[in-house]
Length: 445
Image 1 (cartoon, one colour):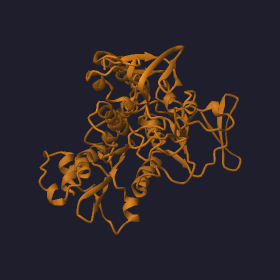
Image 2 (cartoon, rainbow, N blue to C red):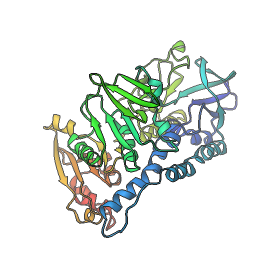
Image 3 (tube, one colour):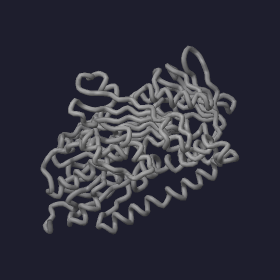
Image 4 (cartoon, rainbow, N blue to C red):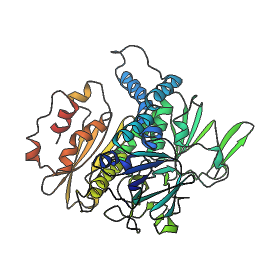
């Protein structure tokens, strides 16, 4: 690699989890660079997962104290400004830390907006860089409704930087972001109304479990408007309104547009150089390769049936490291990738879902367990705790869905059993630590 035709062996556009593996590639002797237009690390650590879970931790604590009332005296409340300040203390150092780690590994970090000149050249704010291979890992950005007054609404990035929590928040959407932020805002003191596009919340999750979460939020004062048909946002005399339904208006202080996320593919000249994409992302083959052989894509920007999640992007980024370094020539083969909605209680799942198993019931056995009476769940008085285990006809565990305050930990605990398709006989050979959520999870298999 001493006589290089181009400045870099591999150049990544973006610096999020779709580029995971870049440091290792540099350590292997490859000349690599990453181009970032905003903060190093991309959405997840700065305006997504890390920021969200930091704000959620006090919510989780208040929920547990609420259940333990009478044993733990007093009533906890969330100090929003202090919570936001803590979030900044935790999150703000991350970009510099990530940049230091990249540079320490030998990665060149280039700040600016990249667009293609040709399939081996990108222009970053007027400076051209060349590379043998280029990876587009630009992720997603919040979708905004194409309606009158759309500029009056805010995005998830705005919510995660709110210094003062509005008295009333209208949330348009019913997916991950909508439900997680409704949970945080409601427990932190805001009146929350969720305006749904259809009549289902978290439609990709097992609905009997979802309904338990929704019922709990309703009990706490969150209002849900199904089939809202949001048509406009208006401002009259310093009061915001959401127009929906047949001439109805919802007065509010702040509007969150949580109607999804779209790929960052515009203004990069992708089509001009032959890279194909649509509103779901960039088309790639099993090697994450676009129609242009030396250009690849990784992370959320890919048009893929795999969930657009941090673990997916990390897996893809590491796969490309192994591919570029010659450690594999095989196409990417995805393991089961877990996902969780950080509501209270949480909903998490991995592998075969209940709806899929119900549709192909001749291939699977579904076992639903009420976990709320398990002694370990009674310790902190969990009232909502259920899981659904999916076994194939070989008696191997191939899927799990859980709703509970510990659902994320429970799914992580059972992940090896799903990923390795362990049979019940093999599961019996695993002896978890006791007492723990792991022991509780394995016991119910």
